[in-house]
Length: 197
Image (cartoon, rainbow, N blue to C red; front, side, top):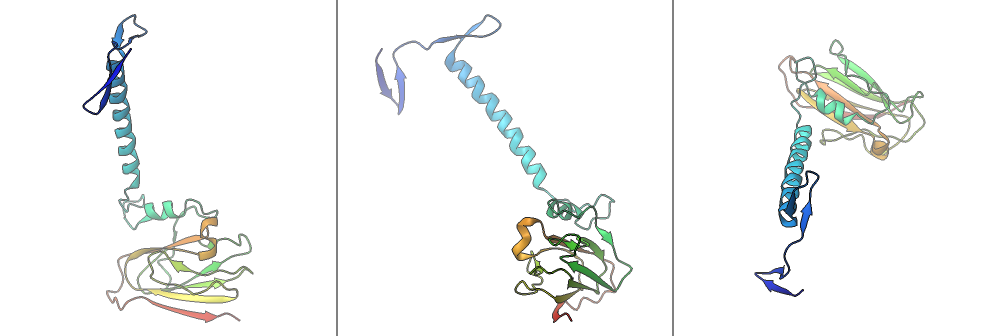
């Protein structure tokens, strides 16, 4: 058998081998190869479409109210103590424990829903070195430390995902969902860091 180069493809002088299928039919291997490639392309296209469909976030929290809970669920999927967004819209001030004794690598509660104008205070209660950093840059408590408090007032409707920098990969993450029906004054968000005891 000899081979020759034609139009940048190697073509053999020998006839293509015939392949026998289960139904007793025979087909050229080049035809079977084309069918196999077509099938694989179709399956690959469906797989990509499925992956892309999973990447979209419609912001629906399951109760028809929006609020970004789908992204919150995804963000907190590897967090040990998350089961739902806790509604705290009836409070003007909320405290989130940082490194509670029940789980040193967690925020408690991990996800809360508040109204605009609410001040959230993170209070270090465990002995670990932690900090609080917003994924989108809205706030940052500074270097990891122990025995501190940090507060941030949320003035605008938004969903803020945050984490402890040294323990993010261990699932130490949280979320604040700020609902849209505030008193209309959007003076901007403010943050303060203070030392505890």
